[in-house]
Length: 404
Image (cartoon, rainbow, N blue to C red; front, side, top):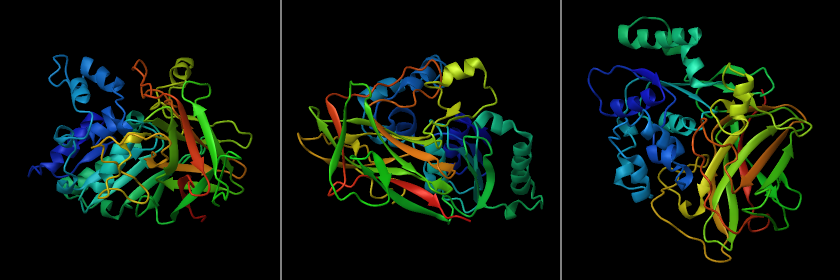
């Protein structure tokens, strides 16, 4: 089996059934958890794309399944949603998994499945574009043919010597590095490094600020966000899984919908972005200025409804927090909540003098994944407060690759 998007999703579920005639799979970007990836990312009912699918193609015009009604009736993780997660432990056939950093629908699910499937023979390639042009690229077709020829036909073509991981490093100014070979993702040379937020200076530093401070914004204000900067004095490469560990407070509210973003800035502070598709026309610019996130990469983002902050201890790692989404824990007045937010994996190069900006907001910072989709608006009121330093040392954890 081979295919992108829904044709990748179907492979996770089919392989978990272990049909005897299935020899190998090639999931080329696709969600692996309908709840967490498609309709309730971060515990928020962001159903714009699901509505487009339901009204159009994916669920069929006869609406064989009314997933929008299911979200409304079952907002927490229940058996209904558990049945929409494949049994990764039963996926044992050889798998050639293809992923990207930039698909805000597919990225998390593809990397999750890669980590969790039980196949002894599994490969990961992380490309630097959008899945459709990548799938039909001649060199990639030949690469996939080698994989299938080896396992379906027994061709002795050296596929077994292919490195387990081949990842990309984005530059966003041209000169991306692709097919970087490694034995794991993150590669062995990446170290999770904490960059602590300092609300006094709005900076990020590897040292904990001694003085406690607060950064806040009114959720209906402009800007409804606070950000923190760090400048790299030497070339720095991030490869792996970022996460945010924050101490937050809601004033005049009992919950918070938080959106976070890691951006690359040039040495003068200008945000850097890159199209993931060959079409870079005027219309493509219009579509992607806000929204159409799978067509233009703007950074690594994450989100969390704070009342859904409870972690799944069986799945959470130091690099990738996983939430149960099975309970609601509202905030008491004055309560400072300690939360973790997973961000999309990155492969990103910073040249000497370039900067990283970390943004916390009450609004969706990137917009929808495709045009003409209803955009989710955070369920927020009052004021959001981010606590830093002292006993509330909020930090952004980044996967810093050792210099060669």
